[in-house]
Structures are given as C-alpha cells and as structure tokens.
Image (cartoon, rainbow over all chains, first blue to last red; front, side, top):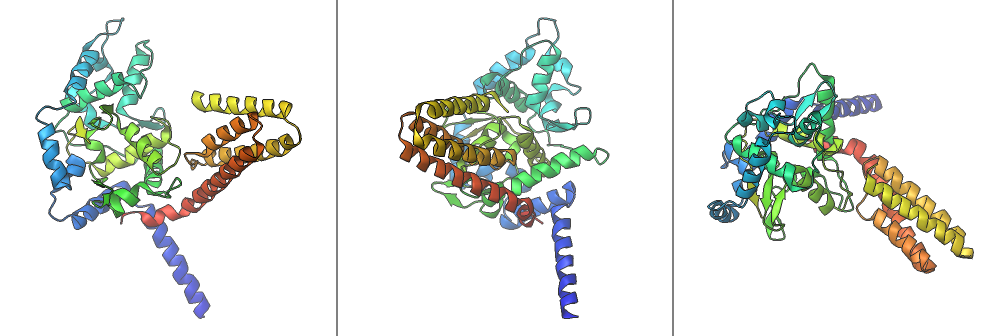
Length: 279
Length: 104
C-alpha cells in the first residue's frame, strides 16, 4: 500500500515537472518577469531594456557618459545608406517588408509558416537580397549589422511584440527548442544560460556583474568597447557559448534563431532601444 | 556541415592518411584511437553538445603524429576522447535535467 502511494506521488511529481517545463509561452513570460521583479523589487519593468545598466548603477553612469557621443552612430549612418541604396533592379530593402521602417525591428524574430522556421531580422534582410538577385551578406561582417543598427534606431520606443501563434505548431516547437537551449547546461564549464542570467543575475564575475535575460535582446546590435566594433545578438550568443567552453553554433543557425525567439518572447512589452553600447 | 568544419575534417583525414603511410608500429594504434575519438566527437556534435576544444585536440594530435611524436599524439587523443565522452553524457543528462531549471 505504502509502495503504491509512493509510486503515485512520484508519478504526480513527474507530471507536475513536465507540465511546468511545457508551460505555454505566456505563462513562461509572466513567471520570468515575476522572477526578476522579485529579485530586484526596485527596478521598474521598463528599465530592463537597458540590460546590465538596469542593475549595475556604477556602470550605468559610465554608460550614460558614453551615450553623449554614441560609438554606434557611424553604424547607423552606414546602415541607413545601405538601406536606402536601390538594388540594380531599382527596388529597395523597404519594398521587401510589409511594415513601415520604424515598425520592422520590433516584429522580429517571427515564425514563418511557409518555411517552418524562425526568421530573424538579419535573415529577412538577406532574404530580401536574394529576392533581388543580390549575394548574401555575411552575418559576421559590418554590412548586415549596420542595417540592423539603423532599423533598431528607427524602432526606438516601439515595444517588442514577438508572437508564437497558437495555430502554428511549428512556432511552439521552435519556441520550446529555444527554451530548452536556454536552460540546458553545456560546455566544459557545465553552465546553462540561465545559470548566469537568472540564477546568478546581478552577481559579480570577476569585475563585471551578470546581466538579466529579461531585456537581453532589446538593445542589439551593440557597440562593444572591448572589441571596438558592432556585434549582433548571435555574435554575443556565440561569445557566451564559447565562454562556457562549448563549441558555438553558426550565426543564424536554427539553434541560435530559436534561442533568440524564446528570449525575445520573454522580453515582450519592453521597448526596443538599440543599437546599444556595452563594455 | 559548414565549410570550415568540412575543411578541418578533410585536413584531419589527410594528416591521418599521411601518418598511416609514414609511420610504423604505433600508426595502427594511433589510427584506431583517432577514429574512435573522432567518432565520439561527431556524436557529441550531432547532439549539439560538443565542447570547445575537442576538435583542436584532434588537430593537435594529428600534427604530433605527423612529426612522429606518438606519445604526445596518443595523450592528446586520450584528452579528446575524454572530452567527447563527457560532452555526450552531458547532452544525455540535459535531455531531462533542463526542465528542472525553468523559471516558474
């Protein structure tokens, strides 16, 4: 009898664990926001769009000083020039997108039912080039990062509005895949993204404090002072994966796009405020 | 498979072939251990759990073998094999363990 009761309790616990792991995107987002609210009661929700500068007051002062002469301004200018330059067939980037230019950034990443995969802004830009018989831009070079910097700047103040449509099972699958990536330990250091950016958020790693995942995607691309150049969100993902001594996935790989999809959904409702400046 | 990975794999195979042709007794052991470690690395990669340095260790092992430094080559292969095995185990463990970390 006791054994049967123990088995029942175990079954119930397992079911509960699975149901929590498989909670829907909106339940996940509400719990995610509530976690950070509980960890940092004095930080207003909107401030998470500023990444680590919502948490680290000293670094925030330095950042605000840097913002007087933003190091990403040149990237915005270059991106604008690329965006406005017509392809040889006379068409422009703008004609590939259904939205007004200031509304584009906040709509990405999105799930594309036709291809059955997550499409990021970078990928949409390259899809546009393909549609206009142009070669693809490399994901680790300036051109595409500059264009996203321009679109991010145009979108400042627009709230992230990433959707996981109920009627597209592939979208939920991609979201779940990104969520699984986020919470899975990897690499020789045996760290999950969440180990640093949820469990240990705000703690010091040597001289730096760990940022919150709530708001991570809002300010990309960013100018990184230590690199002296602009980088995309996926380049940052690759850096983090490398830091835990795992082999990074390719930029714009399915793994990173799904991770971006999950993280962006978690930050829904925060204002897009890219491009940003980071250490 | 991306082009860089294809190139690295090709390089490893070429070096391995050179070693097999050029070396004497140790080559068979090296060849066997290299193939074994590479198979495990590929298994970890296919599971998305490959560690950062495993491929580099295999490359270094090939270089040492090409210089006929078989002791060093075999030691590097052992490290690569250990990393690959740990990465596979980590991936298998995480197949379920990740769910326990979800913010709720």
